[in-house]
Image (cartoon, rainbow, N blue to C red; front, side, top):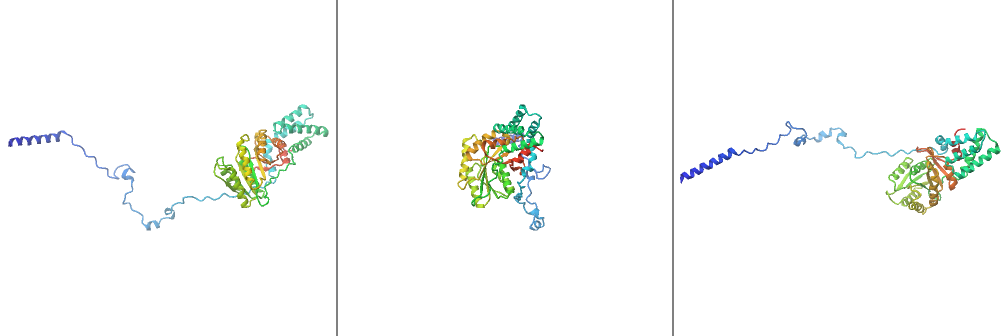
Length: 394
């Protein structure tokens, strides 16, 4: 029995030794690397600031420069824009006539070249008629001008260039209807400010014209408040406010996409409270063929008139559109009773005869013309100076 227990003990010892020798010993995981020793910088523990890093004492901070201790300001103060003083409008068209002459003198030179011929036959008069029509003078006005020129050259027998130029100048000035009232009604009446609405189709430069018109009024000694009733075009109110800030004029604006009539009403109300001379209201551009938008424009005017009449309704026309501008003018006149025309872009490829045809067809005077992109390139319209620029130097 004893030998049996001894044999079993020997077998167990043999099994244990076999397992220990045959089965490979599992390796322990390597110890974590010691921080800061031969490893990539900024990785793991090496990226952290050790807890025992020396800290600055109160005395140390007190000795630092002020800019190292104080945090920088969260927002820098922006200085308000400097208020500009626009140049006077008196004689402005005369100063800008060179720009008009560059684009329009071709018409004047062409007409004078034909009129100074030794013999004015039917072919010559047809050329004169064609030149006037090409310049967008219009059929009716062209027929009248040609007929009067034919009669006067026959009766007077004028032939010298100076006489022909004077004759043509007289006829063109007559066609421009110099008797029309071109003054801007911008003075306060009965304790309320004058109200000027600016209307027109998209793309005519209407908001820019509003800004330039504000400069015209300020240059003439008026105090102005702007109403940003174009609530649908992105940044239209910002653009108008920038123009106003340059001449010290406040701008009343509403939320984007808001009711334009409400903005216009509040602008007149604010202008009355502030005692300004003129409230200038910029309206959204709209196609004259869109009945709904034209009805909205009529609503804007009716709402404004609850506080008093609108003294001026100025229609901005792009002079480069030529005869197409007449159709626009007719519709706007029917809806809001246009009292004056502002012709823009007359310094470019525009044809100056549109001034004649617009006034003749509508009986509405051209009161202002735009002759460039500069801030002070909007000038009061003067028929005599316009014709002088059209015909060029004598």
